[in-house]
Length: 87
Image (cartoon, rainbow, N blue to C red):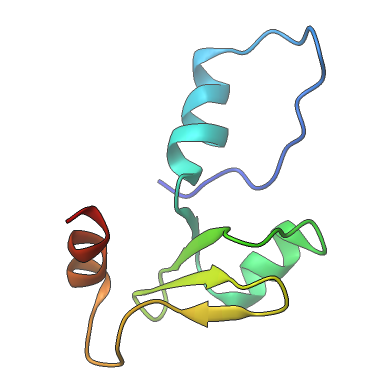
């Protein structure tokens, strides 16, 4: 399931089960159809260390503070990258 995009929670706001799923669990590594969808969803609301999975290329990228960088080598797919990160 793709994430719901970026959201800033307000102090005192009720955090529903749907919010936990859509904005927290689905976005530990945010999921987007591709770079255009990620750019549209996040705009300039990016921070160093954010991670995203791009479905069109089966790749994981991390924001370096100035640009999105691929995680792992060119021959490493999503499954291998994710397992290495958890090692």
